[in-house]
Length: 168
Image (cartoon, rainbow, N blue to C red):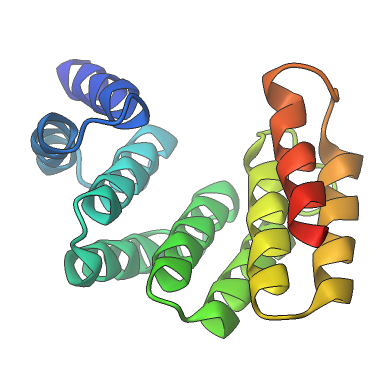
């Protein structure tokens, strides 16, 4: 539980804009719980995001690749790994690779996704398509994002609004 607590604290700090403390916390968390349970996968995703925030694209790519290998045959962890790798590829300007990872994540989740990951990944796919000049792809992704979002108000509605903004 200590490891999970570190991961949660690291994620909160990362979302608050801090870089160094979340990176140190999540590294300790990942070291204590290697594997592919959903909590472990979440910690590894936070590690990649913290590395991206720190500007260490090479380390983020290595961590994302390790996460992909760990979760290859597992449906939700695989989707988390693919959407995480998409973030790294987009940050590095590899939008075709980011798109493939987003699409793989959405394929893994299927139409019944209730995790919230699907709408976030679809929003990211809309942005990636828009940046790459594929307006139709961005529209399809934004539409999918709206379909899987339970509400248009509050936090769940943020992803569809961002996806629509990418299309415009």
